[in-house]
Length: 105
Image (cartoon, one colour):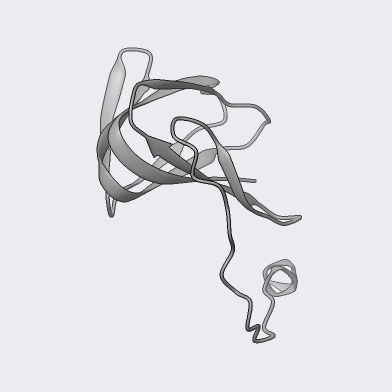
């Protein structure tokens, strides 16, 4: 659609790599655009997260092994796995030794 085409930047850039903090057990903002935000999290201990907004969140495992807990449900999260957390979930916990990207709209 036209909206999707508007969201893509087709111009080649030499500075496409982004620098961001890697503080453990906290949200480290990486990329922000009008359409989405991406944050980096390096989890080394159980970390509670309060999710705000009215949008879903996506968690992408990029290294290590851990899990995402919501209430009594616990799902594995490791390198190569992706989890979609509905907007209705406001409190989650990340556990283990895992690095993830958190994407939200």
